[in-house]
Length: 398
Image (tube, rainbow, N blue to C red; front, side):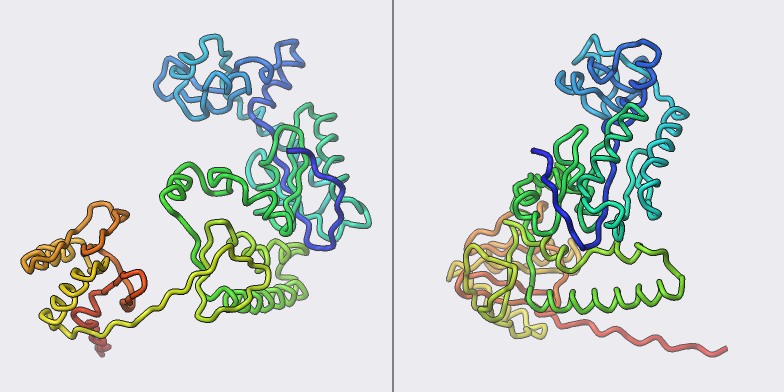
């Protein structure tokens, strides 16, 4: 990914500064001063004692990564992949000194700095346009100064909030500056695999492959509500700023409703609306019409329930019954099978339901529903047996 072209913005401006392979880079700088090889250029890692089972790879060089070495794996296993790898023990005193040095440089550019970890900081650059009219040029100045004075490289991400700024700094490495403004999300973030998104990973990618999707119910109403809440919060933060309860710039670290909705609008998002309406800023690829029906309560009439289930089985419906516990679900599935119904209680909640089958599983839902066009029904325990009324506790007087 190429470095970004110059762009100015009047919105909130956040930098995320991240040291490239921090522990390895800091150790490399010291070794270069001592006349030793640069660890970044050879198969090397920061790790524990390979003779101990607890010794793991803390950081690795790019040549070691090409040999298949992974962060977090036992050092003994890494050596089998890369026998000539140089192993250097951790030196936390060195790391603390280097961390303080690079953070001191970062803090000289803005009064509002947040340490995110030993090798990462957020800089609130909002309101610094008179000093730094070009934010990308300012980011390059910070990046180059750290390299010239301290000898190691950083990546800097620029956006209007911390989330997007951190996402941007994780783009192509090392020694790069990237932007990820809200309007750039469709181009730069949507094409990324799920594992590259902040706070997600391989487990989330597997879930996506299994059909994970965002479902937004009445997105226009959500948008209006989000804008109202954002306005109220920002007015409250402005008042708190006037009273001196917060520092300048803290209110600007909030995610805007525009950013949140943009993040939620992905190729795997489903919009559900009661009316066919235009959604500003949201462009669906396809539209489908579903007719839903409410279910009548069975009021503890097991006979009527069996009658409806038999009819749905005959018509090839997929039926899901939700029970308050897994034990009750298993017992209910057994009872239904005695009426020649194809009911089952799955071990895997993601198991599909075939036409004519009834899945009885654990789950909570206020009320069931029927989609006649796709022959799908969900029935809750409350629909079947009524909602249990809780007795009000009486206050005892001594």
